[in-house]
Length: 158
Ligand SMILES: [Zn+2]
Image (cartoon, rainbow, N blue to C red; front, side, top):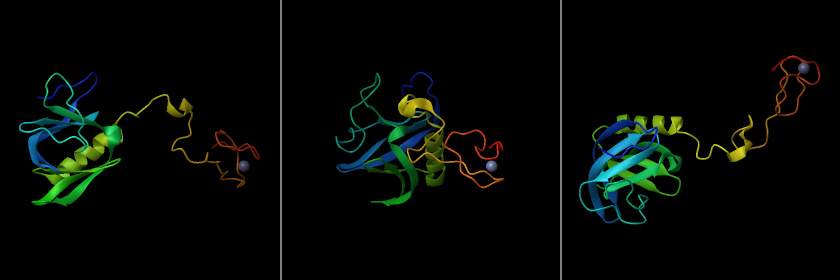
């Protein structure tokens, strides 16, 4: 069993083979509400393959925070279909027994993960980093400044 942190719970765990640039790397993959945690049973994954340095009390445990995960999908690896995990800057290929099930578990964990930095962005109601959205009144059709709770033109609530 992997070392779970405060508030961390395991969602799915099972035997996998991670394909790395130096060859297959067998281990136990655990999807938690914080991270993908790989407990390797053989050689460690090579540096530069996304897993970084070992973490936790065990020296064979590697974790990738869900903030670094974009999406999990079905893909193809060197020996057939694999779970493909798209990270921010690289792609993981993992052989699992149930690709759709694992993909769903990773994507659900990713969707429910805490934001990377709770203080980023000032905590306002505007999210996504784009231009603030101006609400359009459904009664008079006028735009009001972003963040308005009612139409500045006719007073209708948004
Ligand atoms: Zn209005």
